[in-house]
Length: 117
Image (cartoon, rainbow, N blue to C red; front, side, top):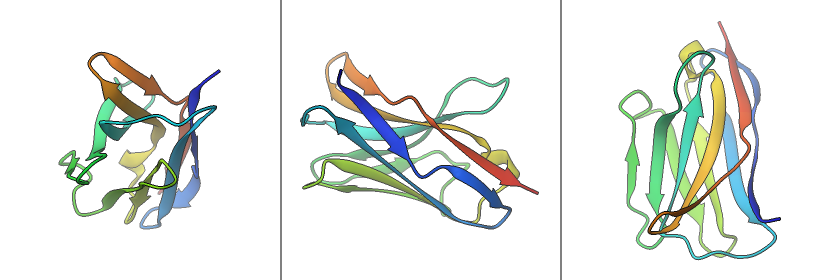
């Protein structure tokens, strides 16, 4: 079964850093864009960051601008999210999303990020 697999979550103190990565298992896809979303307990899933696969254009949620950086390794078909200066409000399950074009997309199962105060 083809799926996106996230890794790199964990527990960190306020002000710390974590890096997440995401790649597809099972086959290689051609992506239009890849993105990270997150969902905190009791809240809806929200957009975090997106990167256009060709060209590398990026966009971020206002809440993470200047602290998070999305990047991709074209050869490895992997997307990364570097998270710096983490805050307790960043605590959530982080999901990887791949836009394959049209309505076609993939989601990962998520990785937990917990920021302690």
